[in-house]
Image (cartoon, rainbow, N blue to C red; front, side):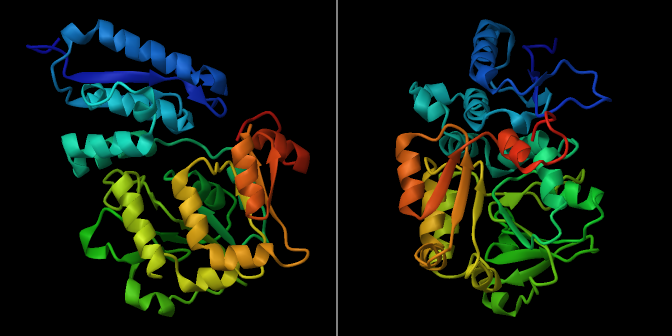
Length: 339
């Protein structure tokens, strides 16, 4: 043990979508109902060991399983504990709010440290899941909009030999803050498209497939130079203000939305940021919902009554299904492997 106490901490998160053949860690497949109890036990153990830890731990490594598979509220609790969030609020609702916990961590440790922690969690190499592989196999699918930071979807496209353009909304690079990062198929580095040049960003969505990462992305290369995360409340407010001025979503994407149906996978309208995003996309989205024969769908596990009402008020048919059940119903390969 280091003089003065333990400075570096490994936190084991065993949960995975599926078990990899090469993995020697203790892992548990699925078990979402156990995430809260497990993290609660971790925090209790950390409290018991508080006397052997330094006041400010230098390194916390989250590993073992797939940290990004752990429920966001539980990851938020861990982040809040590391930043000593309990000194500000004992309300469990605050500790389980990822936006608040990330904002507090940023204020306590700085933006660079927050990026470093997120890179540690998100950049670990894991194979794509069943859902990622299913989407990559849909040759007629042209535009996927995701708010996930990981690169599992991109890896699935690459493994399937399917070319795609990658478009990322940047947040953590001052010189490209009011812009879009566009990496064309086959290229290794993105091109910066400034906000006043978005109209010039011509992607033919009749022939080109695009993964649009609306809330940023981890750069899973070792250096992590292109890590960009919209994760704190201020980040979301900045992004949403850009949406209202038309400098966030490329106009070519907005035009493509017209006349298309939307399929929402795993999203919850309990998240205020998603409700605001849909409101700002509303001119295209709501207009389509009023058209005869135009349908939208949402696949969500155990939506509450208010969530069902919120979806239906937006013209979206919501289905109470886990993603695995949805894929089984479509006859997607790999049943039982998890998504």
